[in-house]
Amino acid sequence: MFLEMMQNVRKKVPLIHNITNYVTVNDCANILLACGGSPIMADDPAEVEEITSLCQGLTINMGTLNSTKVTSMLLAGKKANELAHPVILDPVGAGASAFRTESALKLLNEVRFSVIRGNISEIKTLAFGTGSTKGVDADGMDAITPETLDAAVAFAKHFAKKIHSVIAITSTIDLVTDGEKTYCIYNGHPDMRRITGTGCQLSAMTAAFVTANPDTPLEAAAAAVCAMGFCGEKAWERMTEPDGNASYRNYIIDAVYNLTGEELERGARYEVR
Image 1 (cartoon, rainbow, N blue to C red):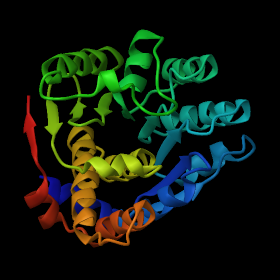
Image 2: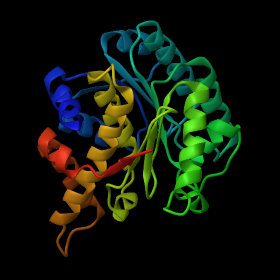
Image 3: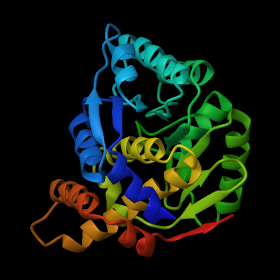
Image 4: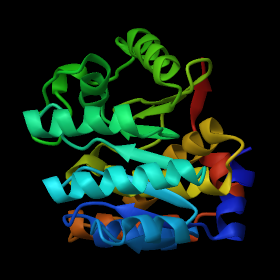
């Protein structure tokens, strides 16, 4: 199954419009190129609707938020909805400030999202309208572990059903659910959290997978999450004593570039609930 998801990305080369943040914009562009997609980065209100119309999918990333960007996100999101293009939301830092929380909830109310991908604290903020994060990171108390997995699956399923979107939560154990079926994903390496932007990269890559596989958004999102985690594992195997997090970032992008559908099919580690 994941083999086909990966092959479709490489075959179709989906053009993805990214309204993303300046901390990770280059990494998001490169991860899209590595997985087989094609990126466009544009965030001015004067052009976002036109650019969205040229593309097949849209990623909205709240990492470096400002009022002008919120306007652009709403314009692009509504245009993508009008064109029936997949839209992915990465609510970075939702819960960290009133502005971020209010902006995330406004987006949720006015734009239909195919997939919402974030950490557990961000997703809880969207679900409950309030929350807390440690900067743009999840609250450590919210980590999804074997002990908290059942409760996290129940929460994610309920929220996915409520808003009719695929919910992807990345943590120690990753969850991807459409409210009926949940993938519990065990790929990844703990040091991926030491790199700024692996979550942003995953959101961009998820847009490529979902755009290339429009009839199966749940499986496409799960394939993207497995791919990113598996490539984090493969990249870690390349690390040598002088290497640090900058090398690790590059090795992850290399691993995505060299990933085959067959390799992803073999390397994906998950259970379905």
